[in-house]
Structures are given as structure tokens and as C-alpha cells.
Amino acid sequence: MLIRRELRLRYKNSALGLLWSLVNPVVQCLMIWYLVRNVWKLPLQNYSAYLFAAFVPWTFFSMTLLDACFSIRVAGPLVKKIYFPRELLPLVSVGANFIHFLIAFAVFVVYSQIGLQLAYGQPVRFEARVLWLVPILATMLLTATGLSLLLACLNCFYEDVKYLVQTLLQLLLFATPVLYQADSLSDARYVITQLSPFGVVVTQFQKALLPMQAFAPRVLEYPRPLDPKFILLGLAVSCLIACVGFRVFDRYKWDLAEHL
Amino acid sequence: MVAIAVSQLTKVFRVQHYRATTVKRALVQWFNSERRALNRAREQVALDNVSFTVEAGETVGVIGRNGSGKSTLLATLAKVYRPTRGTSACVGRVTTLLELGGGFHPDLTGDENLHVICALMGMSRREIAASRDAIIAFAELEEAIDTPVRTFSSGMVMRLGFAIAIHGRPEVLLVDEALAVGDEAFQEKCYQRIEQLQREGKTILFVTHDLTALRRVAPRTLWLEHGRLQLEGPTPLVLEAYRAGSHHA
Image (cartoon, rainbow over all chains, first blue to last red; front, side, top):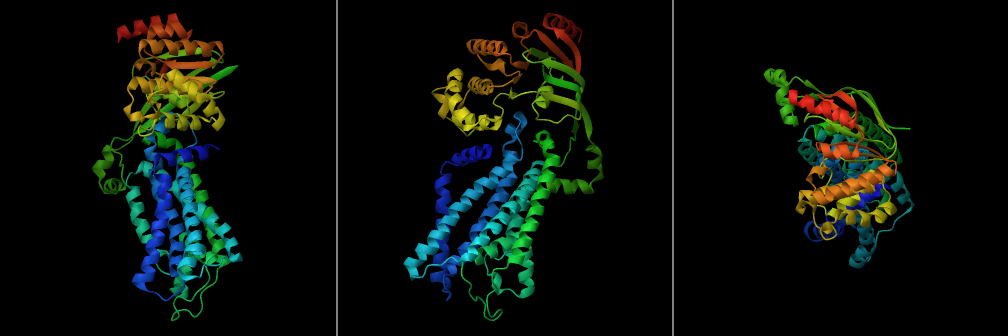
């Protein structure tokens, strides 16, 4: 379809892009592994896998939202001269970043199976829980799409939205259990993080892929299992976000050409 | 069969001269009533109640002074803008050449831009692959096609743009003043292609200041002035009125 083609082209444009999207997660992965093993010296099994697993969807979110801000503004001349469904542009940023995500995910799988095997002799075993990845990824994509549409649109009218987004993402990074484990939060805080689609995706992504471990025996005696009700809530919220995103974009898409 | 139907088309741009382009400025304006007063939206009427139809296979020229709304008319027909009132519709696949290098990304090569624009026009993979060589050959850009568009001369940009527009197999072709930049030989090629499209029964609407070209290619002409359709009819007639009109002004 049209999107695939535009995607592949955008992709080619960041010439080294394809290679870089492999290098980036690999470097991240190695960094985390090194930190966990040699610097923090945490006694937990395979902690690096957990950290990495949280980073993969987070990177997708933050890169997609940032790219989305630029997506329409950058293509200004194109929008003013040719007719095509304007939604394509932010969707392209979602799509391109999703490909990066898949590559990073592949790196994760390789790392968790082979890398850890080589290093410690204990690869991560995937269980049936992994199937929950389907709604989790759906949530991820829907949230990203909805927000991308909104942001692309807003950034057209107000150029500094992209700076706001950068700052908000920093805050969000702390509000989402990426750098720390969700399980080390008290119940109330845990629920709060799970209410945000970002939080749900990141945490449940971890839980679907990796075995449960007690991270903070003082706070919680046993780790919280994968929680379907939050996943489904997240899915519902993300559907809402996507709908709102499309609606708003639809209303303003004709004005975009005039404001560029 | 009608290929282009424009009925009571009105396009009004709401222009705010001090529109806040950043959130920061928007906030500042919120608190500053003087600025707000200056910023009151002014309406600029680009098109005023324009109506005309073009039958399939017709070629119609559009003339008028700068600022008369010709480009807005074509852009609205190309669905870049939405009409404020009235309707504008084209039947069939529309390709456009609205601006020199419009839509070209300067850092992408000619080839990559070709792919992007063709894809956006709705051509499938196969169609693009099939047309690619023909487009490059028409534009005479075999050597330069793999360099960034940034390095193209304006003539090269125009050749590529025109080549893409006509190879999109359009039913309706909209051209906006973009032919002026080509050299005579290429312009000749363009007009020959246009004549070929005419023989194939395609509909063409083009804006030009080149009155000889108009006489050659378009049997019918529209004259726009200040957004209004001043006159419409056989080209020689309209041209005479236009000449007379512009001498008065």
C-alpha cells in the first residue's frame, strides 16, 4: 500500500538509518548489561533483560511522538502542492518507528536467549503469557497513533509544541516504570502507573516476556503477575486516544495547508 | 461528460497578521490586549463565487493578473484547500504541477522524489517501476537523477515535475504557471505532450501568462480578476478583452 512505500522511502533517506536502527538497541543493550553487571552489581537474575525490555517500548513511544511533531511541518511543501490523505504523514512516523521497534525487539529476543545463555548459562524462557503481547502491542500502537495525529496537527499551528513534548517526555519517563521496577512500588502507586497507557504497555510488556521476580522484598513479598485487567483498560483507553486523535486531525486537516 | 465542475466556489482566507506561531507567543498574546486588537483576523477573499464547467477532453486556459486567484483556484481543485463556500470537483485522476519543485524534498535524489510523488499520487509499485524510465527520459535527466534535488537547476526541477505530472496517467491535468522556466526546446516538448494528451481526450486546465501558448493550446479561456470570473469564452475573444482591460488598469 501507499504507506509501505512512503515508509520505505523515508527510511532510506536516513541513509544509514537501517543499520543504525540495529546498532542503537544493541548498544543500549550492552550498556545496560554492563551497568547491571559491573557497576550496580545487582544480585538479581537477568536484571539487564528487564531493563532492556522496558526500554524497547519506551523508545518507540518517545521517538514516535517526537517524529510526529515534525512530520507535517517538515513536509510543508508537499502538503501544499499535492493532494493526499494528510493522515499519512504522522502515520508514517508511527510505522517507521514501529519497524525500529521490531528490530529492537529482535535484538531483545536474541539477547535474552543467546546472550544471556552465553554469559550466565541461563536464557530467559518465554511462556504462554507471551500471547498477551498482542493486545499490549495494539495498545502501544493505538496510543502512539492517536497522539501522533494530535501532535502533528498541533505542531503545525504552534511551532514550539515539539519542545513541550520533549519536556513532557522527560517527565513521563519518570512517571513510567522504565528506570525502576513497577513491582517496587506500593499498591496505590502501582495502580496509578498502570492507568497510563504508557505505564501499562511498558510494565506488562516486561511481565509478558520475562519471568516474575521479587524485586523489592521489603515492599512486596511476591511479584505482581501479569494483569489482564490493566491491559484491557489500557487497550480501551488507547482506542479512545486514537479516536480523539483522528477526530481532531480530521477537523483541522484542511487548515494545515493554509498555515504552513 | 463534465470533468471539472466548479459551482459558486468561494475561498476566503482568514489572515491574522500577528498570529502567535508558538505556544509562548500565544500565551503572551493572551495577556496583551493591544496585540489582540492588532491580530484581529482579516478576511482575504481569494475566490468569489466562481462557477464554470469543463467538459472531458477540453483544454481551458486561465489568465488574470497576479493575485487574481488563479493559483488558489487550481489548488482548491487539487484539493489542497477546502472551499469556504460552494463546490469544486474533478472527475477522474488528477495530477498537478502547482509550483516549481512543489513537493520535492531537497535532500532526496531526483529518483527518490520521483518515487515519493508518484506514490502519493496513488501509483502502485508496478506503475512507478514501469513509468520511471519514461519520466527520466522525458525530463532528460538520466545523469542527474541520482543527485539531490538541491543541486538541480530550476529548469531541471521543472522538467522533472512536469514529467511526473504527465506520466501519472491523469484524466485531469492542472498546471500552474510552471512552464515558463524551461528553455524553448523543452517548452516545445511540453506543448507537444499537451497536444498528445488532448488527442487522448484528457482534460487540461492551465494557468499561464504566455498568451501565445494559450492561443495555441487552449480553445477556451477563463479570465479571473480579484477572485471573480471576469469572462469566459473562446480564447481570442477573452484575450482581446483581457488586453483591453489591462490597458485600462
